[in-house]
Length: 212
Image 1 (spheres, rainbow, N blue to C red):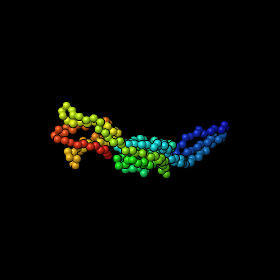
Image 2 (image 1 turned 60 degrees about the vertical axis):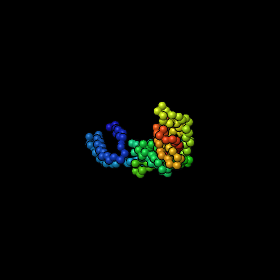
Image 3 (image 1 turned 90 degrees about the vertical axis):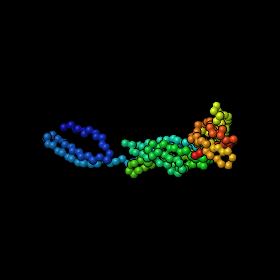
Image 4 (image 1 turned 120 degrees about the vertical axis):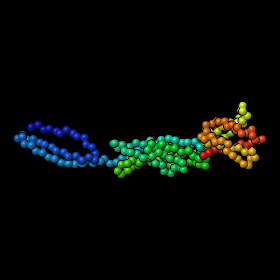
């Protein structure tokens, strides 16, 4: 009889199989063999985390980017991101890898090194890391560029400066006691401030500061 080759089979890792083979010789005698086996799981491979470029940001602005990672295992495993050594307020989303940080005025100027890590859920879990730095600079000092009165008699002035910080306008009648007249959160500059209460005071002083 001619030799016959069994067809190739594609096996799934970590799976139990039971096989049986029947052979027939020229005398029409049937012989059977049965056995079971378990395919081994391939070794876990570490995920790959793309390089993260150093960044710079002005205090009060929000820095954002997304860390990119991939897993070479098939099927790809679940990945989780984390941040090590980050300053207060900095975070990375564990599922998407989205990084966000809005540094405060107190954190400027400064250079902040930190490390992003991606971890898979294989056995054993493996990870990859990338280090990067963020340089925080102080915003420029805001400037009042124009001032005057509107049609209703309210005093107004225009403020220029870096966009992003929270701008607060303070008012005083004696340069001793100050109150916040208005806050412009994450301001887009330039902007106008109108003091509708100015006409109720013989004189009024103003100052600006920024946050957070």
